[in-house]
Length: 170
Image (cartoon, rainbow, N blue to C red; front, side):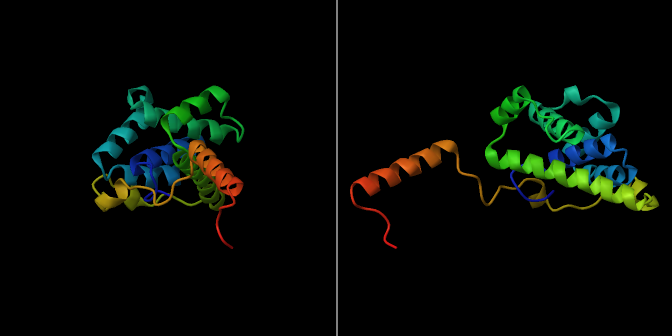
């Protein structure tokens, strides 16, 4: 959920932290914030979320956080205007990823709070930063969803092949 896919890991961690804040989950918030402290961009995201200064974040991060906020408060909470804005910044694969991150951390915060997990002292040690391989912080999706234009083009090609008596042999 965090270290693969098209979206930047710090953005997904910021979404997770925001969800933990909304769900009042100190356990998940502490662990996610620890991971955010591992990179310079993560430090900025964590500080902006902690101080409520999200308007200072890049537009794509603000939009990802808004998407997570809306889906966390209501599964049908993403209005058409917001979805158009999301669609303008993210492709289909990234929208799926935004939704998976949001759904996973909504589940995970409820799971940890349901168990009553205490925050371990070592997690709160600001000097203890996890070491994350650089490759995990920025990755490219192995598979992307086909666009509407690609699907339309394939359907048209299939129609032309069928009309000409050609096609794929079974």
